[in-house]
Image 1 (cartoon, rainbow, N blue to C red):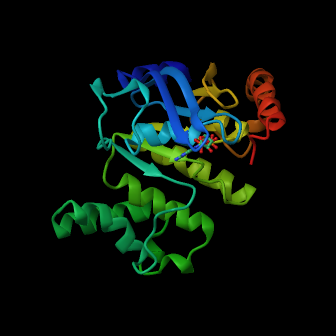
Image 2 (image 1 turned 60 degrees about the vertical axis):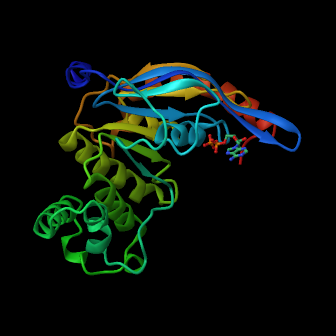
Length: 275
Ligand code: ADP
């Protein structure tokens, strides 16, 4: 059922990675971080990318954001070759980008104000987003007055308010405690299912990757990290993220993916590549 919903939603390809390779030059020569990565991210889908720490997940996301170019291969965004900054995408990092001197509302409004959107519309849309992420009562607070989970909710509103077609998320909940993290994952899925944006979400946490995704993409240990597995997640939506980990379908899929990921994590550990 869920896969039918997902495929109905996925009417095209939002991001196409074709032989994407990234080499960094160093004093000792060249280091290939990502090598020959090829896969499609369907429009409106939620794709998670997992792999051992240091394998190149952030590098792949940085290339998708257009922050750094591919050394070889190409990235297409809605069928257009990506060159320079990816204007169709917004990026959420582990460290949020809230400005400490602006209130929550000021931070949420920032993207629209910078785009010159009419002040009344900015207020209306930011009120709506603050409500959606449950922060209406905290609109006049400053980021330091918020808990970690509230900051994440503010960061989600700040990014999604500008209505990007693609949301790139790099371990956004990595710094949160387990309970807050699960609540935030549920919050994110709620926002995603209402907004129907394409999400590419990087994490080293396999449980998180499965719980959120339509498809989990597994990357190998570096150097020259590449895609070693792609796993569709056929768990029904909406998902109860607080209990999904005991769902037999979840447990089975976890076992299959872990069989692949485990080898990569051990390889990465043996080569000293993990953090
Ligand atoms: P992950 O996100 O999977 O933890 P990264 O994408 O951050 O991994 O890093 C992949 C590899 O590329 C690592 O070995 C890292 O040291 C290297 N790397 C990342 N960015 C740079 C850079 N700007 N210059 C040189 N090496 C880099």
